[in-house]
Image (tube, rainbow, N blue to C red; front, side):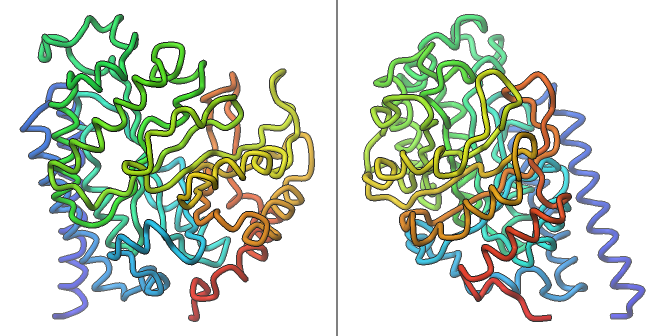
Length: 386
């Protein structure tokens, strides 16, 4: 095959992938059920061709830097010997460029790439097959933070559901009763078709009484636990045993341990460690040890590997580079149960503040250099040779 024909084939694959993504986006507001799922599968198929075409004509590239990880082995992903690094980037799911830029700054390859996905009827609420395949084809494992926003379902299509304004009230109990099995089962079947391992971080920060409708302002802890178990059970019944389940409370609030669904349905215990600094009345400059250290013993007591699913510090109120240096310098020795750490790499976060805040370290040369130096000794296989 000539270089010209190779380029033509690559461009054709990329163009086909773009066309499918456009079609999915255009139809997302009017499509649900089997047609949306079919379009998602078509997009995944074309996206996989695109990813493989790129890999074939550009060389093994990124995936070669992750050959040390036997990611097809579920046992390793559930109980790794090394710390698995990862990230969520604000450009996802539209682009993986931000992840690649972060990796370049840190001099490593990230085994886990995190996505966020809400519940609902539209195509964007379906299992993200296209992006999951892209992440897998690049050599990493996808992690999906799956958020049960129940008001995004059309009551005209699902007449058994409560009215939209009433769905948040005891919504986890409604999930536990089976009211949303139609959607859970669709996701479970799609996850099973994906076949490869995927982390699912379901209904995170369930004990936060302010942010999410699946929190304690609308649900009892028993409803949450029953809802969690229902979801995991439905996935397993559908054959989606490739899913690794991540339970992720907000440890800044008391009694978070009472929401634990049980060791039979949880593979990882996670939490976020985000230093907001003095940007609001409720926050100040907290060190990593102040946020995480006092909670570590309880997190580790469940006997599961511990994940820091959202990790970062803002630059307001102290030395950001020093914060990362202190956090990472002896982390494996001080907190040996921590087996995964995911950078929260977004430049326009507005989830708990009126103003948008920037967590990115890829654009902060000094901080990125500190992080790169700190993580280099953790796992020498991650350091690529060129």
